[in-house]
Length: 272
Image 1 (cartoon, rainbow, N blue to C red):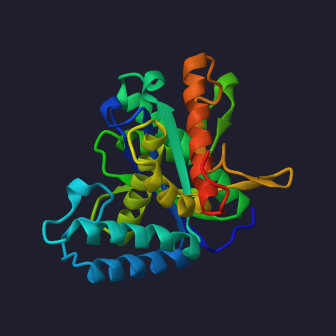
Image 2: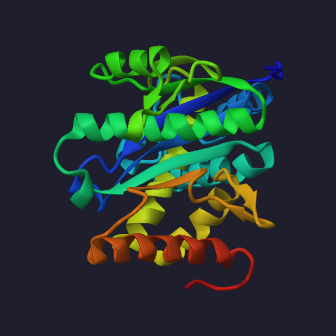
């Protein structure tokens, strides 16, 4: 197997952990090439300096994480500048969403299943670009055994089929907030995506989502199918793939319609 020398990095986090935070449980993050790694590092570093973040301060999407000496306006502008910079840098986003009504109360199994789906999608991206990569998740001490299994055993599917992952994903591991500027970028991007998902469910401001989502739509990984870019099944991973419950299916359709509507605003087509 001939591989490119370029190494990719995929940083993963979770949000909307429980139903009180939003209808959909969301896991995902950003994929960087080595070149983009340095570009994102420098962008975040400059934004932190510009808006008064001191060493050790968190730079995250959640307003509750805002340092007291950084104004709400400065925090909002810092997030906007970072999200706006990501499309020009060329990073990709892969996200997984599932209704809490389907996910159930077992967080461990739900998180493991999400990591499986994301690792599978990331592996497909690496295969498409004939590359290898690293997959790091935000620190979770209950996930070490599962990450070990992903590397050693890969994924098992129905019918006895199996997919090895370590031919492309050379390392599964963990990182944590403030251990890199890339973690800030992944957190802000995922938090922005969460805001738009929750807005589609009626808990955010549509005007804000219409401002936030267009740059995100540009970085969600898509592949060409029949001459058109398709994100569903690639960078956008709604699960389960087949939703038989009519009320639940309607919620998935409404979410997709809302996100498409937010994305079209930048093109002047208005919201749906």
